[in-house]
Length: 166
Length: 163
Image (cartoon, rainbow over all chains, first blue to last red; front, side):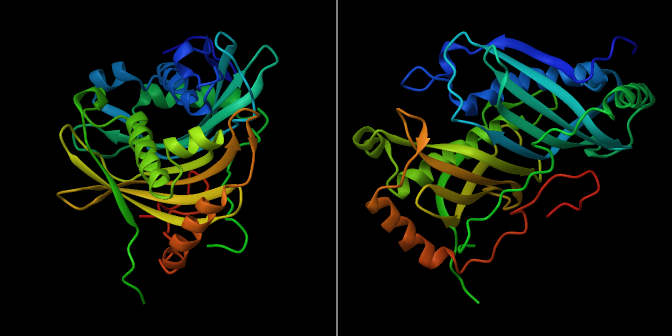
């Protein structure tokens, strides 16, 4: 389970697809969730916790909670670059905290982020379980490269209520 | 204190294409089905296709928080409820629950903040008066519903789950 460790991981490099646009031909930010899915698959493979791990060792990471930020004011057209950086924010024996940050355009403007906490489970018993030694060692190695990265601006956000209501 | 309930406007059945290698509905389809529940809610308050065509205005989610509380499997019937948490001239703050419709358990929640936007300029613009009236009428009842424990959360490794 060796391999180069980038900090953060460049987990996705693509372009705005024609079917991710609004009626006026501009990127709809909710569609950032599609490349984020691809980025997350690359991220889990990078950490050694993807489908191969589940088949081999019958354990998996399940999402527990996520926070999403979208920036509809950033206007992008079809074919503009879309890149995703994935950063480890912390971990425990059966928890993982990470963020995918999506950038659009040649000047890499932030268009979306998805921060998540996942739980590591025994996929037969459907119960929380400590990570197996392989991914545990890999995640520790990734953490040594990621722990000193600057905290993303989106980190730890909560939705602020509208004043005077709720 | 009250028996006022959130809106119940939307249902789904878990489809085969939504199941991933873990044998349960993939997280992306939680987001998709909640987005469908949002469409049903916006239709309910008048922010429908006719409004968008008439006004050149639309809505965009800018922030969302999801809790994944229980797995759902192929064929499971899902029932969604929606609670208005607040609004002003340009923003609508609301909360969905996803339940297993037969077994009754809570499968997931989503808190959302949406902006009302001029679709041409992609800039926020005030909601039209009829929508503000609909929101105000709904708020008269929904403000009496207790605030769900999942609302206003941020993520941490050590935080206790809301449910």
